[in-house]
Image (cartoon, rainbow, N blue to C red; front, side, top):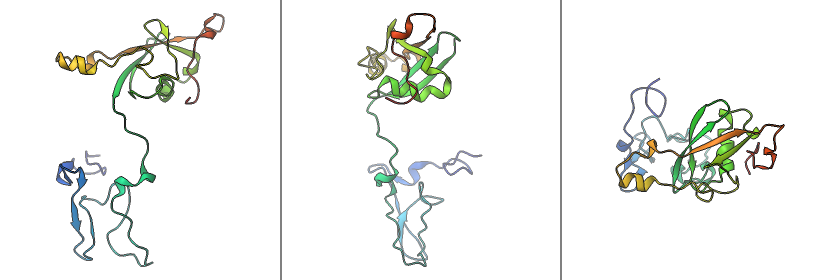
Length: 184
């Protein structure tokens, strides 16, 4: 348990280990070897690099692990948004965080764990089926976060809702776009 980023003990304030102006870890010197590294309490996050010399003569890894492109998982979004998905058949709701630039189909596909047969549903907003290859903004779902904040309202109280309609095999809803089983 515990709230530490390393899984044990009390939470450790991150500001103790980073320079606020640079958002980079503070340097530290290993007392036994004189080698410099990052100041983290239980080692470098993201790697198991030791600051002690290696017996095989290999040079130490670059301490700037946060800049290593091999460790990047994805791109940062300029506009993270919350989106509520409502299954009209069961009445279940879930809120997912999506990228503003991301196609709607990818966002719905990531929520697939929430509903096993999501591909049998049609996603609609304002009664209009969504075009899954377009972003939320391009589908007419505006980002009103800045406007709500200027009015001193909490954007979490005004999350746009996408309704998921079950495609009845006997009906004519097969022409509407459905959620694909893999990302577009």
